[in-house]
Figure 1 (cartoon, rainbow, N blue to C red):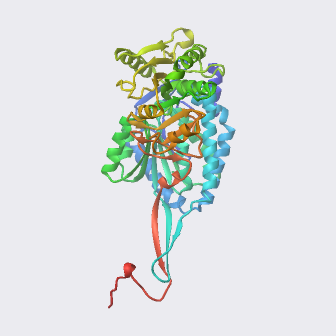
Figure 2 (cartoon, rainbow, N blue to C red):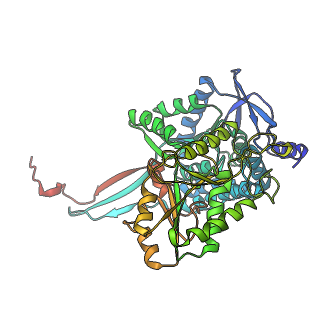
Figure 3 (cartoon, helix red, strand yellow):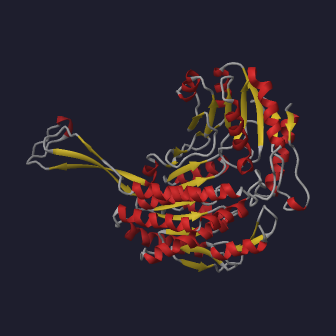
Length: 514
Protein backbone atom coordinates (compact mmCIF):
# COMPACT_ATOMS: atom_id res chain seq x y z
CA UNK A 1 0.00 0.00 0.00
CA UNK A 2 1.36 3.40 -0.93
CA UNK A 3 2.04 6.18 1.53
CA UNK A 4 -0.74 8.13 -0.20
CA UNK A 5 -3.25 5.41 0.64
CA UNK A 6 -2.02 5.33 4.21
CA UNK A 7 -2.46 9.09 4.41
CA UNK A 8 -6.05 8.67 3.17
CA UNK A 9 -6.71 6.05 5.85
CA UNK A 10 -5.26 8.29 8.56
CA UNK A 11 -7.35 11.21 7.33
CA UNK A 12 -10.60 9.21 7.37
CA UNK A 13 -9.85 8.05 10.90
CA UNK A 14 -9.10 11.56 12.12
CA UNK A 15 -5.43 10.89 12.88
CA UNK A 16 -3.67 14.24 12.87
CA UNK A 17 -0.29 15.36 14.09
CA UNK A 18 -1.62 17.42 16.97
CA UNK A 19 -0.53 18.02 20.53
CA UNK A 20 -3.41 16.02 22.05
CA UNK A 21 -2.97 13.20 24.54
CA UNK A 22 -6.31 12.67 26.28
CA UNK A 23 -9.87 12.28 25.03
CA UNK A 24 -12.70 12.40 27.56
CA UNK A 25 -15.71 11.06 25.71
CA UNK A 26 -16.04 13.63 22.93
CA UNK A 27 -13.43 16.25 23.80
CA UNK A 28 -9.74 16.11 23.01
CA UNK A 29 -7.50 17.78 25.57
CA UNK A 30 -4.34 19.49 24.41
CA UNK A 31 -1.33 18.32 26.39
CA UNK A 32 0.63 21.01 28.17
CA UNK A 33 3.76 18.86 28.32
CA UNK A 34 6.48 18.59 25.71
CA UNK A 35 7.37 14.90 25.93
CA UNK A 36 6.76 13.54 22.45
CA UNK A 37 7.05 10.06 20.95
CA UNK A 38 7.29 9.22 17.27
CA UNK A 39 5.20 6.24 16.17
CA UNK A 40 6.99 4.23 13.51
CA UNK A 41 5.44 1.52 11.40
CA UNK A 42 7.23 -1.85 11.57
CA UNK A 43 6.01 -2.43 8.01
CA UNK A 44 8.33 0.10 6.34
CA UNK A 45 9.99 1.98 9.20
CA UNK A 46 8.21 5.22 8.29
CA UNK A 47 6.95 7.67 10.88
CA UNK A 48 3.15 7.56 11.04
CA UNK A 49 2.59 10.37 13.52
CA UNK A 50 3.92 11.93 16.70
CA UNK A 51 2.09 11.83 20.00
CA UNK A 52 2.49 13.88 23.15
CA UNK A 53 2.48 11.90 26.36
CA UNK A 54 -0.08 12.85 28.98
CA UNK A 55 1.06 14.22 32.30
CA UNK A 56 -0.56 14.58 35.71
CA UNK A 57 -2.77 17.51 34.64
CA UNK A 58 -4.28 15.60 31.73
CA UNK A 59 -4.63 12.46 33.84
CA UNK A 60 -6.55 14.29 36.55
CA UNK A 61 -8.85 15.80 33.94
CA UNK A 62 -9.71 12.33 32.65
CA UNK A 63 -10.38 11.01 36.16
CA UNK A 64 -12.59 13.99 36.97
CA UNK A 65 -14.64 13.58 33.80
CA UNK A 66 -14.97 9.84 34.40
CA UNK A 67 -16.21 10.38 37.96
CA UNK A 68 -18.78 12.88 36.79
CA UNK A 69 -19.96 10.68 33.94
CA UNK A 70 -20.37 7.63 36.17
CA UNK A 71 -22.97 9.39 38.32
CA UNK A 72 -25.21 9.81 35.25
CA UNK A 73 -24.27 6.72 33.23
CA UNK A 74 -25.02 4.20 35.97
CA UNK A 75 -28.59 5.54 36.26
CA UNK A 76 -29.31 4.84 32.60
CA UNK A 77 -31.23 1.54 32.26
CA UNK A 78 -28.93 -1.26 31.06
CA UNK A 79 -30.82 -1.77 27.75
CA UNK A 80 -30.36 1.95 27.03
CA UNK A 81 -26.64 1.54 27.66
CA UNK A 82 -26.73 -1.49 25.39
CA UNK A 83 -28.26 0.64 22.64
CA UNK A 84 -25.26 2.98 22.76
CA UNK A 85 -22.92 0.01 22.47
CA UNK A 86 -24.97 -1.33 19.55
CA UNK A 87 -24.54 1.98 17.74
CA UNK A 88 -20.79 1.89 18.41
CA UNK A 89 -20.72 -1.54 16.76
CA UNK A 90 -22.48 -0.14 13.72
CA UNK A 91 -19.98 2.71 13.47
CA UNK A 92 -17.16 0.20 13.61
CA UNK A 93 -18.80 -1.63 10.70
CA UNK A 94 -18.58 1.55 8.66
CA UNK A 95 -14.85 1.92 9.37
CA UNK A 96 -13.84 -1.75 9.37
CA UNK A 97 -11.52 -1.52 6.35
CA UNK A 98 -9.84 1.71 7.42
CA UNK A 99 -9.35 0.69 11.04
CA UNK A 100 -8.21 -2.79 10.04
CA UNK A 101 -5.65 -1.23 7.71
CA UNK A 102 -4.33 1.06 10.43
CA UNK A 103 -4.05 -1.84 12.88
CA UNK A 104 -2.09 -3.77 10.27
CA UNK A 105 0.19 -0.86 9.40
CA UNK A 106 0.84 0.28 12.97
CA UNK A 107 1.26 -3.17 14.54
CA UNK A 108 2.45 -5.29 11.62
CA UNK A 109 -0.15 -8.08 11.58
CA UNK A 110 -1.59 -9.20 8.24
CA UNK A 111 -4.37 -7.10 6.74
CA UNK A 112 -6.67 -10.11 7.10
CA UNK A 113 -5.90 -10.27 10.81
CA UNK A 114 -6.31 -6.50 11.13
CA UNK A 115 -9.82 -6.67 9.68
CA UNK A 116 -10.50 -9.70 11.84
CA UNK A 117 -9.58 -7.72 14.93
CA UNK A 118 -12.11 -5.04 14.06
CA UNK A 119 -14.71 -7.74 13.38
CA UNK A 120 -14.00 -9.02 16.87
CA UNK A 121 -14.86 -5.56 18.21
CA UNK A 122 -18.10 -5.59 16.24
CA UNK A 123 -18.95 -9.04 17.58
CA UNK A 124 -18.38 -8.03 21.19
CA UNK A 125 -20.60 -4.97 20.69
CA UNK A 126 -23.38 -7.29 19.49
CA UNK A 127 -22.74 -9.60 22.45
CA UNK A 128 -22.76 -6.75 24.95
CA UNK A 129 -25.93 -5.21 23.49
CA UNK A 130 -27.75 -8.49 24.03
CA UNK A 131 -26.18 -8.92 27.44
CA UNK A 132 -27.60 -5.57 28.54
CA UNK A 133 -31.00 -7.26 28.82
CA UNK A 134 -29.61 -10.27 30.71
CA UNK A 135 -27.75 -8.87 33.71
CA UNK A 136 -29.48 -11.33 35.95
CA UNK A 137 -29.43 -11.80 39.71
CA UNK A 138 -30.90 -14.55 41.87
CA UNK A 139 -33.73 -15.14 44.30
CA UNK A 140 -32.74 -17.28 47.26
CA UNK A 141 -34.95 -19.23 49.66
CA UNK A 142 -34.93 -17.82 53.19
CA UNK A 143 -35.16 -19.93 56.34
CA UNK A 144 -37.25 -17.18 57.94
CA UNK A 145 -40.98 -16.88 57.49
CA UNK A 146 -42.17 -14.07 55.22
CA UNK A 147 -38.64 -13.27 54.08
CA UNK A 148 -37.01 -13.34 50.68
CA UNK A 149 -33.36 -13.02 49.74
CA UNK A 150 -32.08 -11.61 46.46
CA UNK A 151 -28.74 -11.17 44.79
CA UNK A 152 -28.12 -8.07 42.69
CA UNK A 153 -25.17 -6.80 40.67
CA UNK A 154 -24.14 -3.14 40.61
CA UNK A 155 -21.45 -1.31 38.60
CA UNK A 156 -18.05 -0.75 40.16
CA UNK A 157 -17.30 2.76 38.89
CA UNK A 158 -14.17 3.60 36.90
CA UNK A 159 -12.55 0.72 35.03
CA UNK A 160 -8.90 1.18 34.01
CA UNK A 161 -7.96 -0.71 30.86
CA UNK A 162 -4.29 -1.22 29.97
CA UNK A 163 -3.80 -2.98 26.63
CA UNK A 164 -0.85 -4.50 24.76
CA UNK A 165 0.47 -3.77 21.29
CA UNK A 166 -0.38 -7.13 19.70
CA UNK A 167 -4.14 -6.53 19.80
CA UNK A 168 -4.29 -2.72 19.72
CA UNK A 169 -8.09 -2.43 19.77
CA UNK A 170 -9.93 -5.76 20.26
CA UNK A 171 -8.92 -6.40 23.87
CA UNK A 172 -10.05 -2.90 24.82
CA UNK A 173 -13.48 -3.66 23.38
CA UNK A 174 -13.74 -6.93 25.34
CA UNK A 175 -13.41 -4.89 28.51
CA UNK A 176 -14.99 -1.56 27.60
CA UNK A 177 -18.18 -2.81 25.96
CA UNK A 178 -19.01 -5.22 28.78
CA UNK A 179 -18.04 -2.71 31.44
CA UNK A 180 -20.19 -0.04 29.77
CA UNK A 181 -23.41 -2.07 29.62
CA UNK A 182 -22.79 -2.97 33.26
CA UNK A 183 -22.91 0.76 34.07
CA UNK A 184 -19.21 1.54 34.42
CA UNK A 185 -17.06 4.19 32.78
CA UNK A 186 -13.63 3.43 31.33
CA UNK A 187 -10.15 4.94 31.10
CA UNK A 188 -8.02 3.31 28.41
CA UNK A 189 -4.24 3.41 28.30
CA UNK A 190 -3.16 1.70 25.08
CA UNK A 191 0.36 0.45 24.45
CA UNK A 192 2.72 3.30 23.68
CA UNK A 193 3.79 1.19 20.67
CA UNK A 194 0.34 1.29 19.04
CA UNK A 195 -1.55 4.36 20.29
CA UNK A 196 -2.86 5.57 16.92
CA UNK A 197 -5.28 2.69 16.50
CA UNK A 198 -6.71 3.64 19.90
CA UNK A 199 -7.01 7.28 18.82
CA UNK A 200 -8.91 6.13 15.73
CA UNK A 201 -11.34 4.09 17.85
CA UNK A 202 -11.99 7.07 20.09
CA UNK A 203 -12.68 9.22 17.04
CA UNK A 204 -15.08 6.61 15.66
CA UNK A 205 -17.18 6.36 18.82
CA UNK A 206 -17.24 10.11 19.50
CA UNK A 207 -20.07 10.73 17.06
CA UNK A 208 -22.22 8.10 18.78
CA UNK A 209 -21.71 9.80 22.14
CA UNK A 210 -22.46 13.24 20.72
CA UNK A 211 -25.58 12.13 18.84
CA UNK A 212 -26.99 10.51 21.98
CA UNK A 213 -26.04 13.27 24.43
CA UNK A 214 -23.94 10.85 26.45
CA UNK A 215 -22.06 12.58 29.28
CA UNK A 216 -18.40 13.37 28.92
CA UNK A 217 -16.09 10.74 30.32
CA UNK A 218 -17.93 7.45 29.68
CA UNK A 219 -15.13 6.33 27.34
CA UNK A 220 -11.77 7.98 28.05
CA UNK A 221 -8.44 7.59 26.33
CA UNK A 222 -5.08 8.62 27.74
CA UNK A 223 -1.81 8.30 25.86
CA UNK A 224 1.16 7.58 28.06
CA UNK A 225 3.88 5.13 28.96
CA UNK A 226 4.44 2.90 32.00
CA UNK A 227 4.25 5.92 34.30
CA UNK A 228 0.59 6.43 33.47
CA UNK A 229 0.02 2.71 33.99
CA UNK A 230 1.60 2.95 37.46
CA UNK A 231 -0.49 6.00 38.26
CA UNK A 232 -3.66 4.11 37.29
CA UNK A 233 -2.68 1.06 39.33
CA UNK A 234 -2.12 3.21 42.44
CA UNK A 235 -5.26 5.29 42.03
CA UNK A 236 -7.95 4.35 44.58
CA UNK A 237 -10.53 6.10 42.40
CA UNK A 238 -10.16 3.32 39.82
CA UNK A 239 -12.14 0.33 41.04
CA UNK A 240 -10.75 -2.27 38.65
CA UNK A 241 -7.56 -2.44 36.61
CA UNK A 242 -7.76 -4.77 33.62
CA UNK A 243 -4.22 -5.24 32.32
CA UNK A 244 -3.00 -7.23 29.34
CA UNK A 245 0.71 -7.81 28.79
CA UNK A 246 3.71 -9.69 30.07
CA UNK A 247 3.77 -11.67 33.29
CA UNK A 248 6.39 -9.26 34.64
CA UNK A 249 4.10 -6.31 34.05
CA UNK A 250 1.11 -8.18 35.49
CA UNK A 251 2.91 -9.02 38.71
CA UNK A 252 3.77 -5.36 39.18
CA UNK A 253 0.17 -4.28 38.58
CA UNK A 254 -1.19 -7.01 40.86
CA UNK A 255 1.09 -6.00 43.73
CA UNK A 256 0.22 -2.31 43.49
CA UNK A 257 -3.53 -2.84 43.15
CA UNK A 258 -3.62 -5.45 45.92
CA UNK A 259 -1.77 -3.02 48.16
CA UNK A 260 -4.78 -0.71 48.05
CA UNK A 261 -7.26 -3.64 48.15
CA UNK A 262 -8.43 -2.85 44.65
CA UNK A 263 -9.46 -5.31 41.97
CA UNK A 264 -7.35 -6.49 39.06
CA UNK A 265 -8.17 -8.56 35.99
CA UNK A 266 -4.98 -9.92 34.43
CA UNK A 267 -4.37 -11.41 30.99
CA UNK A 268 -0.68 -12.21 30.87
CA UNK A 269 1.82 -14.43 29.09
CA UNK A 270 1.29 -17.78 27.42
CA UNK A 271 3.53 -20.72 26.59
CA UNK A 272 1.07 -22.73 24.59
CA UNK A 273 1.51 -26.29 23.36
CA UNK A 274 -0.14 -28.26 20.58
CA UNK A 275 -0.10 -32.04 21.05
CA UNK A 276 -0.26 -34.10 17.87
CA UNK A 277 -1.13 -37.77 18.33
CA UNK A 278 -0.73 -40.64 15.89
CA UNK A 279 -4.54 -40.65 15.56
CA UNK A 280 -4.70 -37.04 14.34
CA UNK A 281 -5.89 -35.68 10.99
CA UNK A 282 -2.41 -34.70 9.86
CA UNK A 283 -3.47 -32.20 7.22
CA UNK A 284 -5.60 -30.22 9.66
CA UNK A 285 -2.91 -30.51 12.32
CA UNK A 286 -0.38 -29.01 9.92
CA UNK A 287 -2.67 -26.06 9.12
CA UNK A 288 -3.32 -25.40 12.80
CA UNK A 289 0.35 -25.72 13.72
CA UNK A 290 1.51 -23.26 11.08
CA UNK A 291 -1.12 -20.58 11.66
CA UNK A 292 -0.82 -20.90 15.44
CA UNK A 293 2.96 -20.50 15.27
CA UNK A 294 3.41 -17.80 12.62
CA UNK A 295 0.13 -15.84 12.76
CA UNK A 296 0.77 -12.26 13.91
CA UNK A 297 4.45 -13.21 13.52
CA UNK A 298 4.21 -15.25 16.72
CA UNK A 299 3.15 -12.20 18.73
CA UNK A 300 -0.11 -13.56 20.14
CA UNK A 301 -0.35 -14.56 23.77
CA UNK A 302 -2.06 -17.68 22.36
CA UNK A 303 0.63 -18.41 19.75
CA UNK A 304 1.91 -21.98 19.60
CA UNK A 305 5.31 -22.02 21.32
CA UNK A 306 5.71 -25.80 21.60
CA UNK A 307 4.76 -28.66 19.29
CA UNK A 308 4.62 -31.97 21.14
CA UNK A 309 4.45 -34.77 18.56
CA UNK A 310 3.98 -38.48 19.16
CA UNK A 311 7.13 -40.41 18.29
CA UNK A 312 5.27 -42.75 15.89
CA UNK A 313 4.41 -39.87 13.54
CA UNK A 314 7.24 -37.49 14.37
CA UNK A 315 9.40 -38.37 11.35
CA UNK A 316 6.43 -38.09 8.99
CA UNK A 317 5.03 -34.84 10.35
CA UNK A 318 8.25 -32.85 10.64
CA UNK A 319 9.32 -32.83 6.96
CA UNK A 320 5.83 -31.72 5.94
CA UNK A 321 5.94 -28.91 8.47
CA UNK A 322 9.34 -27.69 7.27
CA UNK A 323 8.13 -27.84 3.65
CA UNK A 324 5.23 -25.51 4.47
CA UNK A 325 7.53 -23.13 6.38
CA UNK A 326 9.73 -22.84 3.28
CA UNK A 327 6.69 -21.78 1.26
CA UNK A 328 5.57 -18.99 3.60
CA UNK A 329 5.46 -15.52 2.06
CA UNK A 330 7.11 -12.98 4.37
CA UNK A 331 6.66 -9.30 3.70
CA UNK A 332 4.41 -6.27 3.80
CA UNK A 333 1.31 -7.36 5.74
CA UNK A 334 -0.89 -5.03 3.68
CA UNK A 335 -0.27 -7.35 0.72
CA UNK A 336 -2.91 -10.04 1.11
CA UNK A 337 -0.77 -12.83 -0.36
CA UNK A 338 1.80 -12.49 2.44
CA UNK A 339 1.46 -14.86 5.40
CA UNK A 340 3.89 -13.27 7.84
CA UNK A 341 4.52 -9.62 8.58
CA UNK A 342 7.14 -7.90 10.75
CA UNK A 343 7.82 -8.01 14.45
CA UNK A 344 6.71 -4.91 16.32
CA UNK A 345 10.18 -3.31 16.56
CA UNK A 346 13.92 -3.95 16.53
CA UNK A 347 13.94 -4.86 20.22
CA UNK A 348 11.64 -7.75 19.35
CA UNK A 349 14.11 -8.80 16.65
CA UNK A 350 16.91 -8.86 19.22
CA UNK A 351 14.76 -11.01 21.51
CA UNK A 352 14.19 -13.37 18.58
CA UNK A 353 17.92 -13.67 17.92
CA UNK A 354 18.82 -14.09 21.58
CA UNK A 355 16.21 -16.79 22.17
CA UNK A 356 17.44 -18.83 19.21
CA UNK A 357 21.05 -18.52 20.37
CA UNK A 358 20.10 -19.58 23.91
CA UNK A 359 18.14 -22.58 22.65
CA UNK A 360 21.07 -23.64 20.49
CA UNK A 361 23.52 -23.24 23.36
CA UNK A 362 21.29 -25.41 25.54
CA UNK A 363 21.48 -28.22 22.99
CA UNK A 364 18.62 -27.35 20.67
CA UNK A 365 18.82 -28.12 16.97
CA UNK A 366 17.70 -25.47 14.48
CA UNK A 367 15.55 -27.18 11.87
CA UNK A 368 14.59 -24.10 9.87
CA UNK A 369 14.74 -20.30 10.06
CA UNK A 370 17.08 -18.25 12.25
CA UNK A 371 17.33 -15.35 9.85
CA UNK A 372 16.67 -11.61 9.92
CA UNK A 373 15.61 -10.51 6.45
CA UNK A 374 17.33 -7.62 4.70
CA UNK A 375 16.71 -5.64 1.54
CA UNK A 376 14.43 -2.86 0.35
CA UNK A 377 11.24 -4.81 1.09
CA UNK A 378 12.43 -5.35 4.65
CA UNK A 379 13.97 -1.91 5.28
CA UNK A 380 12.28 -1.48 8.67
CA UNK A 381 14.62 -4.21 9.98
CA UNK A 382 11.75 -6.00 11.70
CA UNK A 383 11.22 -8.99 9.42
CA UNK A 384 12.43 -12.43 10.49
CA UNK A 385 12.02 -15.99 9.24
CA UNK A 386 9.75 -18.17 11.40
CA UNK A 387 11.98 -20.68 13.14
CA UNK A 388 11.64 -24.33 14.17
CA UNK A 389 13.94 -25.71 16.85
CA UNK A 390 14.14 -29.28 18.11
CA UNK A 391 14.43 -28.86 21.86
CA UNK A 392 13.72 -30.26 25.30
CA UNK A 393 10.84 -28.99 27.40
CA UNK A 394 13.08 -28.32 30.41
CA UNK A 395 15.37 -25.87 28.55
CA UNK A 396 15.21 -22.51 30.33
CA UNK A 397 14.37 -20.62 27.14
CA UNK A 398 11.60 -23.11 26.31
CA UNK A 399 10.08 -22.43 29.72
CA UNK A 400 9.87 -18.73 28.87
CA UNK A 401 7.64 -16.82 26.47
CA UNK A 402 9.41 -15.17 23.54
CA UNK A 403 7.12 -12.92 21.51
CA UNK A 404 8.41 -14.06 18.14
CA UNK A 405 7.75 -16.82 15.57
CA UNK A 406 9.88 -19.46 17.30
CA UNK A 407 8.42 -22.92 17.82
CA UNK A 408 10.10 -25.64 19.84
CA UNK A 409 9.59 -29.19 18.58
CA UNK A 410 9.66 -32.22 20.88
CA UNK A 411 8.40 -35.80 20.85
CA UNK A 412 6.53 -38.02 23.29
CA UNK A 413 5.57 -41.65 23.79
CA UNK A 414 2.34 -41.71 25.84
CA UNK A 415 -0.49 -39.22 26.20
CA UNK A 416 0.17 -38.84 29.93
CA UNK A 417 3.75 -37.91 29.09
CA UNK A 418 2.56 -35.33 26.54
CA UNK A 419 0.11 -33.75 28.97
CA UNK A 420 2.78 -33.61 31.69
CA UNK A 421 5.14 -31.83 29.27
CA UNK A 422 2.45 -29.41 28.21
CA UNK A 423 1.57 -28.52 31.81
CA UNK A 424 5.19 -28.28 32.95
CA UNK A 425 5.52 -24.52 32.38
CA UNK A 426 4.61 -21.54 34.58
CA UNK A 427 2.05 -20.17 32.14
CA UNK A 428 -1.42 -21.60 31.63
CA UNK A 429 -3.28 -19.79 28.87
CA UNK A 430 -4.13 -21.97 25.87
CA UNK A 431 -3.59 -25.57 24.80
CA UNK A 432 -4.74 -27.96 22.09
CA UNK A 433 -4.63 -31.57 20.96
CA UNK A 434 -5.19 -33.14 17.56
CA UNK A 435 -6.67 -36.61 17.80
CA UNK A 436 -9.60 -38.57 16.43
CA UNK A 437 -9.52 -40.82 19.49
CA UNK A 438 -12.45 -39.80 21.68
CA UNK A 439 -10.78 -41.17 24.80
CA UNK A 440 -7.66 -39.08 24.23
CA UNK A 441 -9.77 -35.99 23.57
CA UNK A 442 -11.80 -36.48 26.72
CA UNK A 443 -8.74 -37.08 28.89
CA UNK A 444 -7.17 -33.88 27.53
CA UNK A 445 -10.11 -31.69 28.58
CA UNK A 446 -10.72 -33.52 31.88
CA UNK A 447 -9.20 -32.54 35.22
CA UNK A 448 -6.44 -35.05 34.47
CA UNK A 449 -5.56 -33.15 31.29
CA UNK A 450 -4.67 -29.60 30.37
CA UNK A 451 -4.25 -27.12 33.23
CA UNK A 452 -4.86 -24.12 30.96
CA UNK A 453 -7.81 -21.75 30.82
CA UNK A 454 -8.37 -22.83 27.21
CA UNK A 455 -8.19 -26.45 26.05
CA UNK A 456 -9.09 -27.19 22.42
CA UNK A 457 -9.56 -30.39 20.48
CA UNK A 458 -8.77 -30.49 16.75
CA UNK A 459 -8.26 -26.75 16.45
CA UNK A 460 -5.22 -24.67 17.31
CA UNK A 461 -4.44 -22.63 20.39
CA UNK A 462 -5.37 -19.20 18.99
CA UNK A 463 -8.38 -17.56 17.37
CA UNK A 464 -10.83 -17.72 20.28
CA UNK A 465 -14.46 -16.74 19.69
CA UNK A 466 -15.91 -13.92 21.78
CA UNK A 467 -18.70 -16.11 23.20
CA UNK A 468 -16.38 -18.02 25.51
CA UNK A 469 -14.57 -16.62 28.53
CA UNK A 470 -10.97 -15.85 27.55
CA UNK A 471 -8.10 -16.18 30.00
CA UNK A 472 -5.68 -18.52 31.71
CA UNK A 473 -4.28 -19.89 34.93
CA UNK A 474 -0.96 -19.81 36.80
CA UNK A 475 1.29 -16.95 35.62
CA UNK A 476 -1.25 -16.04 32.94
CA UNK A 477 -3.04 -14.25 35.76
CA UNK A 478 -6.38 -15.99 36.23
CA UNK A 479 -8.49 -13.29 34.57
CA UNK A 480 -11.47 -13.92 32.27
CA UNK A 481 -12.68 -11.52 29.61
CA UNK A 482 -15.16 -11.44 26.73
CA UNK A 483 -17.91 -14.08 26.79
CA UNK A 484 -19.75 -16.39 29.17
CA UNK A 485 -20.28 -14.65 32.55
CA UNK A 486 -17.13 -12.51 32.36
CA UNK A 487 -19.37 -9.47 32.85
CA UNK A 488 -19.43 -10.22 36.57
CA UNK A 489 -15.81 -9.05 36.88
CA UNK A 490 -17.00 -5.48 36.20
CA UNK A 491 -19.71 -5.49 38.88
CA UNK A 492 -20.09 -5.79 42.62
CA UNK A 493 -22.39 -8.39 44.15
CA UNK A 494 -25.01 -7.34 46.68
CA UNK A 495 -27.17 -9.65 48.78
CA UNK A 496 -30.57 -8.26 49.85
CA UNK A 497 -32.94 -9.65 52.48
CA UNK A 498 -36.51 -8.34 52.53
CA UNK A 499 -38.91 -8.90 55.42
CA UNK A 500 -42.54 -8.55 54.33
CA UNK A 501 -44.04 -10.09 57.47
CA UNK A 502 -45.25 -8.79 60.82
CA UNK A 503 -42.40 -10.16 62.97
CA UNK A 504 -38.61 -9.83 62.88
CA UNK A 505 -37.22 -13.33 63.40
CA UNK A 506 -33.46 -13.88 63.47
CA UNK A 507 -31.60 -16.45 61.43
CA UNK A 508 -30.34 -19.68 62.96
CA UNK A 509 -33.31 -19.58 65.37
CA UNK A 510 -31.63 -17.07 67.68
CA UNK A 511 -33.96 -15.49 70.25
CA UNK A 512 -33.57 -11.88 71.36
CA UNK A 513 -36.46 -10.52 73.38
CA UNK A 514 -36.81 -6.92 74.55
